[in-house]
Image 1 (cartoon, helix red, strand yellow):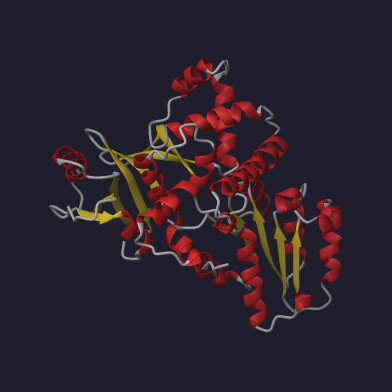
Image 2 (cartoon, helix red, strand yellow; image 1 turned 135 degrees about the vertical axis):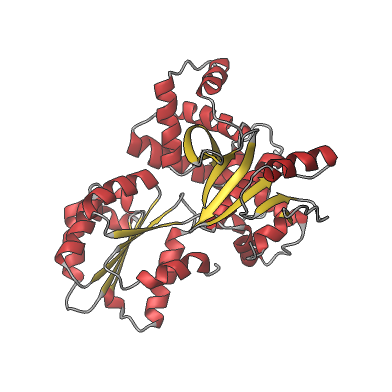
Length: 399
């Protein structure tokens, strides 16, 4: 397993902090591995084993500790002196009222550094924010980036077949160990089923898995397009499902809470305001999209757009869809005032496509960098707008 320096570099400064470190990500995105890598680094710094308390709530040997009072006693019994103790609570959402334990430990003990992971962003952020009152820091853990995938597999990053393998089967780390398409599908199906059963049905109480599948299928088929509740309701009716708008939004919200999809809001470039309507959804992992794709073939233009979105998120940009006076820009990426406008296209096949992709950026009047990202190897940069090959974009830090 590769060392996920992308995240470790951000977490290291908090190793000894009294802030609760929260790692949030879709199931099997590598959170447990990152915790183990943190533990390894602590041991390299000569931290004693007795001062590292690790509990994975998916392990049956810790099942009794899913009672929050027993968990609290178990941890406090292990703290014997005034040296700093490092507490790791992995998949902590399996513990009812876990937030009380975290708050109690943090408030009553001055010599603890607490790390927790979870697979449900809403569950963690809502409950923790209320109890801890800002005494925490969240790290969003994503599936592998293309660069990490290449590092893990030792494949040629420039070979398009490797790029398309990443696009097709996604970046969940454990899928790399399977070579046969059938085995990869079975693994991804097991991950998806565990998300639905544990993070949606059990925790959110929404039990219509058929509706989830139909809704997710629609999202996959319309990735990168404007969201329309009416269109989804019509689609579901054609599938024999009569669903109210309220139910639709409840299930859509559940898919977001389980981190299967991510909502992207629009930003009015001219009016400088975030818009709450006509948002879009992208897949957290394209491997999950592939196993739910009834068409079997990859929708290359939208898949590439999704890959760029996920890369921007991994690089910690805040991402919006850009609304211009005449149309839209695929992404506005903003990080600490570093703003970029980005158009994404499969190929710049002819002059009409070139005019369309570059034209939307030309009408933006400010001087922030503008990019067109495609699979083309020829450089079509013009009038200050930078054209980048998508593979070069994914493996380069120069952006």
